Image 1: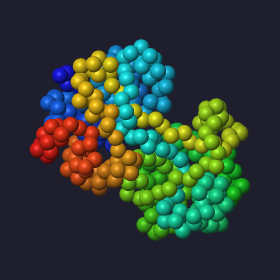
Image 2: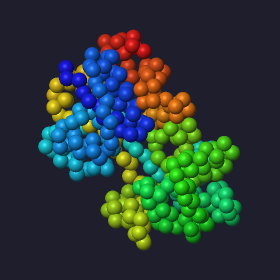
Image 3: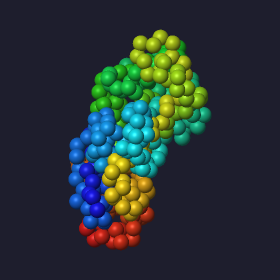
Image 4: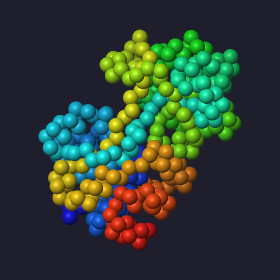
Length: 308
């Protein structure tokens, strides 16, 4: 069997899943798969145009819809299942303890009725909505949501956290003190694996045209309330590899999936232990045999377990 090159993107969840695929294919199916460093745009573009690398385990395809469509239409790549069927989930979140204490707060509109529950540390007469650092797409959308949902009129300030660490720190601090917090975050992430958060509903359906026209455009003056679309995450496989890989390998790639919560908890463990993608994959295999054994043949499962 041809043994694949597996693209490992430069973020934690993609690193652990590419290492997981490598271990399972090598130990369970007798491969000598290799990991190659990748990133969303160059990897997906290369696969769609040249059919290499062989596998992109965690491809966020909504970022390049035209490239993916062309690659699939021309028969160079195929979509094989999803490692994260929950999708990439962005939006405004509140801590679970606050959601439990205030079951009436379900939407962004509900939260904006209660600035007193989310006090601005610099000015307690106002509420605070925490945003990500400049340069993130989510930061632009959050600033536009602040305008669209009339956050200022509701008595809230929009807080620039300055960096990823600043944003993470604001959640950690609120959690340790059991204080109110509302703002931008996304899943799956190590932080949401550690601190349980509840995503607020938007009170409206997603309008793709409006999303493109204004919610994602920093200087658009009249954004309207909208719902944040969930990002589609699939495994992309180069067509030539799919034809040589054999049904058992393709069956594994189709079945291999985990929830955002499972992955978040694994990433939280990796962060706490300064673990590499390979360490995280081995930890998952040791601790979650009931999960991964359903993805592979009984023969492969025996070999993988023996290798741990």
